[in-house]
Image 1 (cartoon, helix red, strand yellow):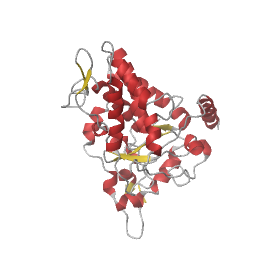
Image 2 (cartoon, helix red, strand yellow):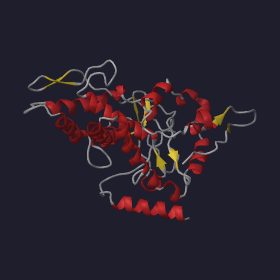
Image 3 (cartoon, helix red, strand yellow):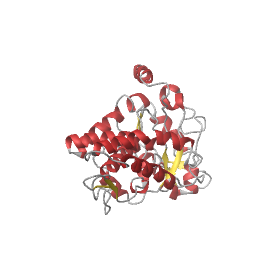
Image 4 (cartoon, one colour):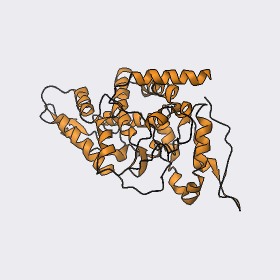
Length: 319
């Protein structure tokens, strides 16, 4: 009970520090996963490319990379929990969404003290980008937390050191300490945002591609277009790159996830990861936590005659 009380106290303190116009939510890529939705890569690419073009248009003065980064961030990022491009994606008719209510989501039926943020604020929408289902919150992580990651990288010139602080924020006040959730996918989106900002000015950050921008000596020239396809992959999907849950939330989430085994047996390819070894290598410094035991491909086992499904019995996640 002391642990529950401490978590609640931390959560209340965190909420008091959040401006009223900010939103906070978890996401859910399990509920309605098999429902088809349109891919939004092209319309989201357009938003970012317009922002890049505006950031360098009518440039005056010397080269200033951080000025470009900040202009993009101010245009489609933001200082609040829900970035501008994220809010746009949540409301635009051009972006198709899966939107489970809190009563239908993976967080339903859990006590308030276990689910915390999800119970209080509900569940954010899921969109499809580069043929991957991702929470709309990942757009904000990409632009805002990615910018912070890039700033730390410029300070330390060390990706691993910059990644350490990113992992700390996921553990601390606005991460697992108050929500009960340590999101591996958030950390991946943060890192890919860093790669985006770096790729504005450096060749081969995206392998085989030149920098998006080139400094001519007087102004900026756009060499190529940005695409989310260079950054979004299966590790942005919280059904595949599963969250690490604290001891309060873990048993409730495991029980709820088992209820999706019929969906898994209907379409197991919807829970597959291609070339995971490559993704593990790319993200080796991010302090992702091992949670593969909760993937449905591991949690569910082949049905036996007379049963709709059966489940394995994971030993539990390490703290």
